[in-house]
Image 1 (cartoon, rainbow, N blue to C red):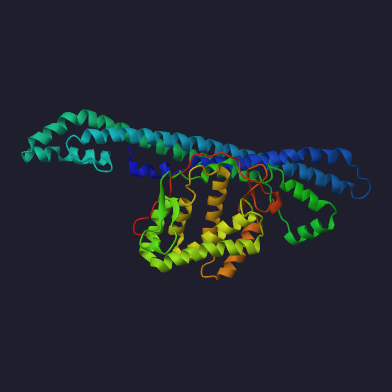
Image 2: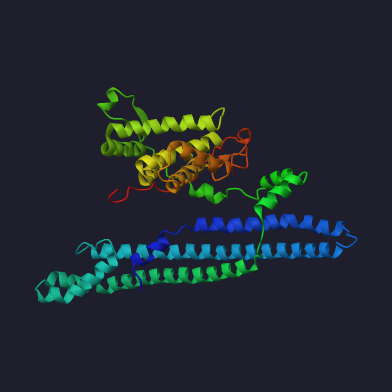
Length: 422
């Protein structure tokens, strides 16, 4: 027997994010398998004579074993996470069934009183009061409780059983996944390398830089998965509103915004006044100016300029107004109906990077913050849109190599809500 409060963590799970990790593991398997033919050609096409032959043969065998161990380890890890995704999905289905049955219990209890936010606990309370009500002469309510008790008990037990089964399903699968991941990790070889030595080798070997660039363009090597597109979407807001309101609009031009965006700006006006609104506008203008100075762009859209601007904008807003308000506002900013899926995902993803940059660098100057943001773009911690209309990490493309999003949309997640007391 379990209650709704005990399965809240299951309701909050996001199986598609675990699936993203599983796909990353399987992507590595594909990458390794794409390299195996080259290794085989080296083995067959190279004949070493002289004193180094024994060492050469040993190194080839070690490379063979290493590739096989890597492939097996990542394959096991991907399968373990696939199984856990299935278990999370089933656990959430069971919770959904429990919620449905508990809602029916709430409707039944509602015939004689308020079932409260958790009808199972509400029924326990009513059932415990049955004898007390009878002794107090409240025979009408006591009789109603007695008459509904068989059906209420059935719904109570059924809902509790669904919740308990959900907990058992998730807990058992999590244990199995953890053990499988541990076993997979045991398959992975240890690597000892010096990054300085690696850079020296790369710089000294003709053609190696080109090989590295070609590997970077291999979709199996490194690319945001479809789960990134699915996760970084927000539900559209079809309602429009104008901001600011009179009398401020008498001296400042009104802008048409989504209703949720306008509401959050009114909240800012209420808490920070006109100075807060002016600071908000200054940060907006600053983000465009600094992006243009750091990443010149012909149109400022879908490229490194765009990525820098969103990261820097969110970082500065977080410095000034806090992470919670910034998350809500910049997410509401993307709720315009018809926003292309890749562009929406790019902006929401880069917004999140910006807030993380601000939190990791408290108290730094705007100039120093811009340096950290530029590093994030150059190191590929942000995303841009490639010529195929899909997301790429920002270190994989130059500005001329970026493109425009495909004209498609995806279902969105609910907007983040204001936290109590904030």
